[in-house]
Amino acid sequence: MSISLKTGGEEAIFTGDIAHNAVQIFRPEWVSVFCAEAEQSRVSRRWLLDYAVSRNAVLFTAHFPEAPPALSRAATTASPGSTCS
Image (tube, rainbow, N blue to C red; front, side):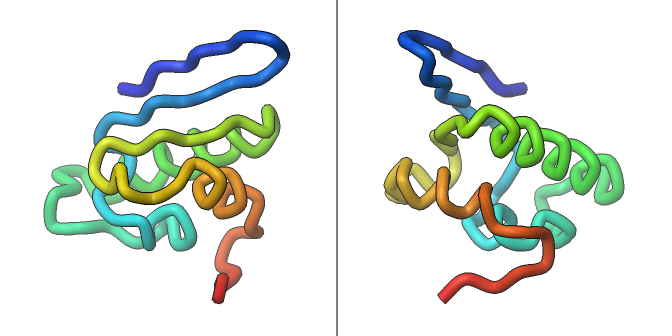
């Protein structure tokens, strides 16, 4: 589950268990041992990332809150399978 907050033309998405590690933002096809349903987790993660990109939304993640929101926004604009340095 995630929550979207919109105000002043901006959108923030507060994620639940959509990603357990920051690498899953860059590699949404990767699953962790905590993904009980691997294929559904890939589908859900890809959907949320596409949603965020289409709205230029900022992601606030539950499992790696130390990541700055700007990184989350930049990461969601990376094309699938791309690598970020």
